[in-house]
Length: 61
Image (cartoon, rainbow, N blue to C red; front, side):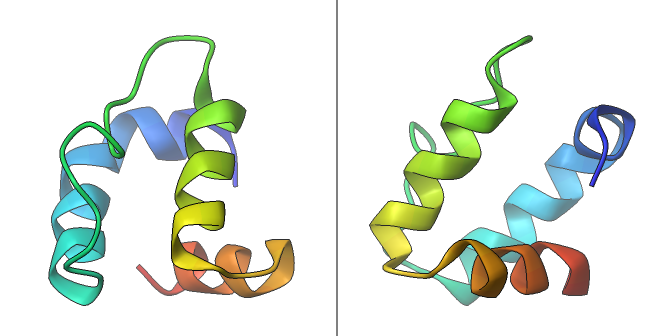
């Protein structure tokens, strides 16, 4: 997953994540330039997923 993918389609991905995982809040999904890894790590921890599991979730969006 590259930065362009996150930036270009983040609003779509964010909506799909919120639909699939109701426990995610807007604050959890707030994208800040240069902080992609921290944001994705925070979401991964909140969902209780391994990195591989979370990468599969993101790839399926």
